[in-house]
Image 1 (spheres, rainbow, N blue to C red):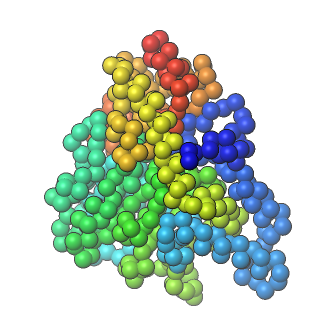
Image 2 (cartoon, helix red, strand yellow):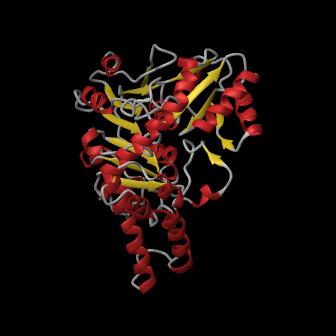
Image 3 (tube, rainbow, N blue to C red):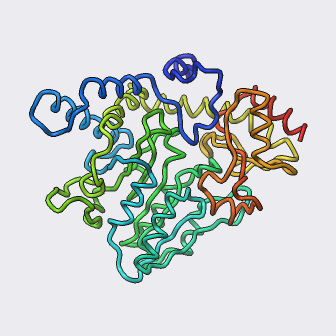
Length: 393
């Protein structure tokens, strides 16, 4: 069975527009049932949780169901997750609450989105901890190599932070291999940013053996809300940010300064239902469809001698997701974007996408703000427009 494109399109009201959305690495369109769920909640059950009257009971149950579905999505327990405004905010909360000792070292990948670097840099500066940068040698196809990590980790290592997939490169990182390296040291923890991976592949935090994992639901067909997982085995290493009289039995109670937006949380089951009943089979169909689409655009980009593709150059679904970034020799990336927009309804963007250290320190572009052109899940029509634009510049 192949991926049913018509059925999928019918579930996203925004796709009725002329606009072709190729910027969903920055945020996906939203499922019809998610929109309906949020509207219904705000219309019928928009009350404070935890009371004994009927409507509050309904709201509380819906909110609880949201947490259960969110945990199920990554094979976690509800008490191991926290939902909040953004991945950036949740990682800042975690860095503030995580227990450190003098002399601790943090190892941060330069392939990180800044969300998974800034929080740790800030706490290191505040507490006088050492930061080690985990770099990469190949500027066109940088990787988070576990062998390179082995040269950095030590008994002093407290935390390693890396992406599951770079939001610039699209290359899939060997998280399980990294976890094995990190966990050779008793106090070392692994924090993975899964924002760019979660829309494309099934996530199983237990199988990955990570300590922390974060991603954003608004990039997985849902509302503007994010999720942080912390394995129950490390909860005793996390202080609480909550009021003194509140419990500390769950990650949410420890890290959330207030409840996440009720209407967004309770809509998450609608996203999870989209992948059911045969979850793994649907993810396989999605990956196969993405491979077909990215093969088209990568074949074109790789064959053009003016174009440099960053990240994995093949379309192999086991090696990359369809987040594709490139530059065109002799022209600004933003100009490529604007010329495509003049000729078509394709919408994407250029820039550093908050992976400033990757663009500046590893890829080495002179104009970091202009950055790369990033497109996602393209097709033959886009290739024709790109071919025309590049030839004209």
